[in-house]
Image (tube, rainbow, N blue to C red; front, side, top):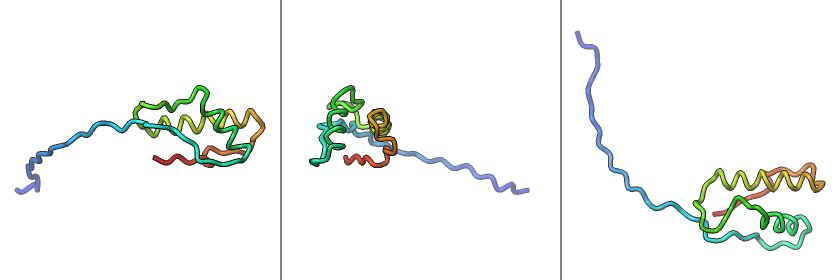
Length: 87
């Protein structure tokens, strides 16, 4: 009786590269009051620090932090999806 069960082996080699680090954090120039406020906010207690490992969770946390601060400053309908990060 053939059960159709076969035994296979696979061997893999993984090459792990060094993690990416944040070299610098900068804002695209804009003269709007909101952009100036975001720039000021980002400098204080930012989750993103030069030299830290690049992680999506840190970028998301920074967007959420800025969203919360902006909402306390009267930008009630602001959404963190309005902020874009380029790496």
